[in-house]
Structures are given as C-alpha cells and as structure tokens.
Image (cartoon, rainbow, N blue to C red; front, side):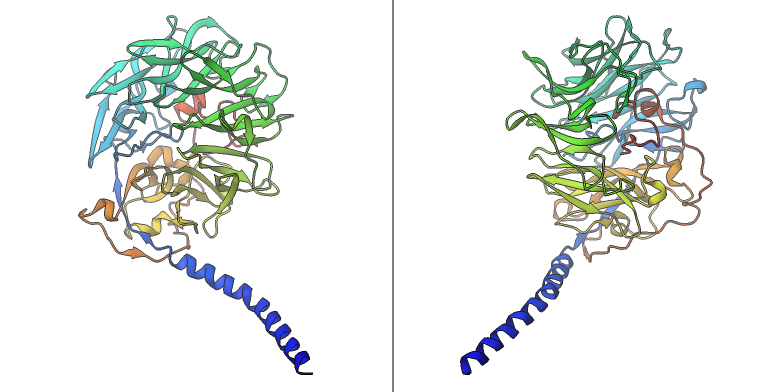
Length: 525
C-alpha cells in the first residue's frame, strides 16, 4: 500500500512538473530577454550641402568601414542642369561626401555644376562612385556618367571601354582596385545595364593601376561586376548566351539567361549557375570568396536566396524561405552569416532573417508592423534593417529602423536615441564592427514615401566603452522596449508625392535589374 501511495505521489509530482515547465520556460525566456539591455546612441544628422536631401546607397553595402568613415551624397541648392533626366528625383545637383571624425567633406565632381555619388569606401579610405562630366552621351542623349575613384582628396576618371560613354564604379578595395560596369559602342538589343533603355553592350570591368580590364562574359554579350574583395575576387552576373527567353524573369522580360559569376585572376569567370531558373544575381561577396544572392527557381515564378561556397558546395545552396514563395539576401559577413528577407506562408508578408550554420532564424517585426528586412550583420552578431506596416511592405522604403542583437527581440532604434531628435529613423543600411550605424531618416513633415525628396543621411554612434568620453552621450543602459515609435500625422500623410525611381534604380536597377516596381518580383531593400 505504501509503495502504491509513493508511486501515486510521484506521478502527481511528475504531472505537476510538466504543467509548471512551460511557465518556467516562459519566465526564463522573459528573464533572458530582460537581460538584453541596450546602449543609447548619439544621433548625428548629416544634413545636406544646402539642398533638401542627403543619401546613402542601399545598393552598395561598403558605405561604412570599420574605421567609422561613411560615404554617400547630398543635395546642393543648385537645380539639375539636365531636368529631363535628373541625377536625383528632386532635380538638384548632388555631391558625393565622406563623413569621418565628425566632419562632412564634399568630395567634389569631375565638372563644376554637375553631380556625383559615392558608393563604397575601403578599409583604408579608397572611395569609388560615379560623377557626371558635363558631356552628353550621343547615343542615349543623357549626361555621361563616369566611374571615379577618390584618393588623397583627388578624383580620378576611370574611363570607359572601347570608346563608350558611360561607366559606373561599385566596389573598391585597399589596393585601389575598382569593380563596376561600362558601356561600349557595340550594338546590343539586350543591354544588361538597362534593358530597353540602352542599346550597346554592358561589360564588367576591373580597374587597377590605371587600366580598365574587360572581364569578359559567360558566353553572352553582356556582364556586370558588382563587388570585389581584398583577394581581387570579383562577383557579378552575365548573360550566358544571346537567345532571349520568352519568360519575364528576375533579370527582365525577353532577355537571355543570366547567371552569377565569380572572377579570379588567372582563372577568369566561373559560372555559379542558378537554382533552376533563367536568372541569378549576386548580392554580396565576403573575404572568403563566398557569394550570396537570389535566383529564380524552375519556371521563373519564384526566387530564393542562395549561398555559393566553392570549398563546401560548388553548386548554389538554396537557403529557403520562411514558408512563403520568395526570398533574397542582402549581406554575408566574413564568418558566413547571411541576412535578408523571406516570405512568410501565403507570401503576403516577409520577415527579416539571419541565416547561420544552416539555420534560418525569423527576426520578426516591430510590434504593429507587418514586414521587415535585414540589410547587414556585423562580427558581433548585431543585425540592422527596417520594419514597416502593411501599406509599405511592397514599396522600397522604410518606416522603423531596427537593431537585433543578443538573440532578440527586435528593437526600434528610435527608442535608443534622445527624445525629440531631429530625425525619425526609417532605414539603416550598414553596421560596422564598432557598432556604428548609418541610414536615412525623416525630418518633421517628410513622409516615408518621400524620403528621396526630403530625407537625411545619419550616423549613429553607440554610447559604449568603445566610444568613451563622447560629449552628449548617455552611457546608461536602456531596458528593452519592444514598442514601436510613432510618427506624427504629418509624417504619415497619405497624400505624399509619387516617388519616381532615383538614378540608379531608373537606369540600371543595378542591385536587382529587371524588377518591376511593386510587382511580385520587386525585392525591395
């Protein structure tokens, strides 16, 4: 009898423990999250050069280096001299800038009265970008754009290929090697630079030592180079033939198959293939030669994020989604962590993700929002991106800038800066290993849809032990605040101006060429 009673008591105790476990787990999780205190940040509004807006490129992830220097471009008060094809949608002349040690420096242009844009800064301060040169392209009837390199306070025109008129510089490394694209004068109906807009070949180049080298193609007429690393590896994508497909894929409508590539000195281009579709586009390259991007699946109705790593899987690795149809990557760090966004079941919403060691983690959204997108992760596992409500899910604009660290949850960066700050932080594009962050935000009265008319570039400096003694920094820790900051009604005004795509989205859409604005294909960063 006694043994039966003991058995019953043991069973009751066991069942009771099962009932308690979920509560203990929830409490442990809550306690775990409560320990995730965050640092305050000092907001530095970079302002402009006298015009209405300033910008960071969301198509070039090298805009911020680990020395705390950032590059972008800002409006001047001068109207654009070619109003039928403005450099920026607000039609003001803009100049490239560098922000470093608290100083904003105008990098200048190739020609007085025209515009320039900085897209990348290397670890040692080499800066690549584009500048107008005051000449008019006789083939396109628009101002000429030239790839440029800024070094030691000087600007160098990198030229073009085969007497062409246009070139664009994207990535640059410590050796002042520059990767990009250039148009030549050879007729081509599938001009990869902007299908349907230009009509000559687009070629990938690597500029080094004063010489622009054509990197060739994967068999078709065109190629574009996006990124390079310190080992002179270059990634981009290229047509594989000259036969147009009947489908409208991620690369455009009625254009040839295009595959991502990696180029290496002495080896040339290696075709990375696709996930079964007729288009694949790289999004980032790390120091280990790993490439991430997106690729259409067979049938070209959906696209997935991919990872290519020669050492472990020479074929593209499908990173999958969060249950929906589509996904894309934005960044890979040097240890192989990948961030981007992926559709949820039903494909009406997407969440930011962190992919690490074969596992895709859903980073969620800020409370009240429906979608999110992660743009970069640093070596400390800090992820930055944007979170927005349903109305902005399909538009390439941000609403609430977020930081995700220490296992989450996602935190609105607006809650980590001083109250009544000059900007509503909407977009964050990059975070370096020092925890410094760059992005764009909204002054009072500027709507998210109008950020390219009135938004300002900003830098966030964490008030931590790596940034001791900064005047105005609040070095106390912040308790987790998962509530989303609210914009004023003026900022959320639905009557905001219709936003025409800016230069790099209108002409090249160089991050994801061929995507129709607002369509199923638009993988808005």
